[in-house]
Image 1 (tube, rainbow, N blue to C red):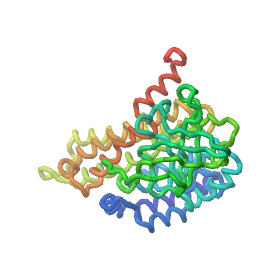
Image 2 (spheres, rainbow, N blue to C red):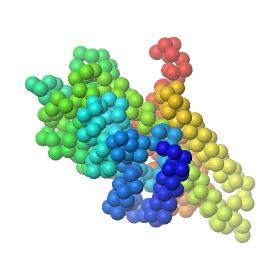
Image 3 (cartoon, rainbow, N blue to C red):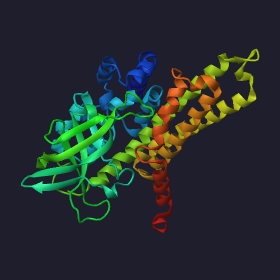
Image 4 (cartoon, one colour):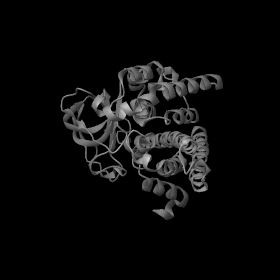
Length: 384
């Protein structure tokens, strides 16, 4: 994407987020749903395919461009980005990283247009950050595969048209080996979705359990086909690395909004006859948050450039996700503190963002998992 086109896309998304979505944030939080007209607008703007190559109908953004888009999307409720984030991210990347030509041609154009919504079915009750204990099984039955098991906290599962399900195809293989990915369309007999999860924050971003009871998948539903049947973990790892950098950028965008809310409140809130912006301890809180925001933005852009260059697609995304997700939590906490009692009240943006931000330190690999990845990349075999 050339610089002029990127600038136009970013300006359009910025205007859309700030004029159309921000005024709806409380409604989305109260109703636990994004209004249909916003969903339709996202499809029309091409947001369901921003990271999908142009040959499949997407915008074809590289990660550096995608990070700048995520900065804009992070300005508002995470429920907006959740609508289409999985199509571009961990689910769509399954096909980009490991799908056959036929699978890509069949699914990616529909993901890019928003005709199809995808989910990424990796997490289980006893297999989250570490998939080596993954229990969902896939066995051959003639030309087909039969899947049994359950997945937990699966984003967009209640509305998904297809779920990328990771299952163990070789029970004898140790650890992360012997895992494959399957395309399981909604409505496949034996596939059922649990009720929507009730979460601390991120209302409007739906998650639910996925149950597979004798789900029959034809041979062409195995991601990547017969060759390399057990490469599912490698596909998942690549998808998650891309997703971690994206989440880091989203956290930076949210931190920017929180700094904005803190600055505006400090300028207008008066105490003892003067704005609280004149109090040096309040200034200190805002200065720390601004510094965190600057540091997160710089780190994410540097990591994205290295990812695009192919020089670091492991430690960098882990470091960005670790720092930015922890950083936005600090910024959210300071924002509540600047607001005082008002920051603890429902209906105030920083209270909602405080709840929303907490999840970023958990999904797509907890902060502790990121620490392990970063350290092992630095220490090599000595760390194992």
